[in-house]
Length: 274
Image (cartoon, rainbow, N blue to C red):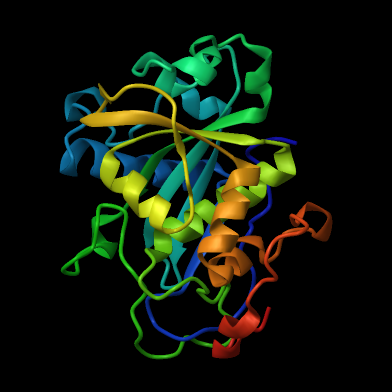
């Protein structure tokens, strides 16, 4: 299956607020991919200055790993691009973190791009949320919780937001699509090079990544982490049944993990039609 032809993981539904409604899709055409690169340019080059703007005269940030990645785009129901992330697959290039981080102890095989185990690994990277959707006091670089305003129109191509109300909505939606597509593609582990603030935020949501090497300077101080999809599922289901229900909503029955806490369906009462 081509990474550029995967169907959207969004589901139709209605919900309980103006801002909480976003459409999360796997990028499938050149126009959407350009939108992804534009968001990344604004966040990584202009705002956070991790990358030098001079190297991107078209104001589109991309690299060689993009050809081997699944890209996810968050779009507000009004049509405004809101955020993006990618899942880099195994290729002769290895993973981006390998260029900047050193993996140690049980994860030292991740230093070798040719190691056969990498076929079931993917690296989550280039997480970026548009500044237009993180302007409130207390919002992090990864967005903020949903806002409760007017009800959305009927039939919006969005999914009601199920996790706890203090959860960064765009971040959670992007993770949901990456998780579901990882299940479909047979990816069993995620690699992530992240700053501590993001690690703490994801840990609070139940994403309990394991430290996989020492801290290094990679767009600021970051550390490599690894999590198995199995451990991610167990961690999220224990931390918040509502978040777990949101993560698996729309996933094919044969891919839904068995034996975990029953999904809490109470959040569907807010108006989800899916």
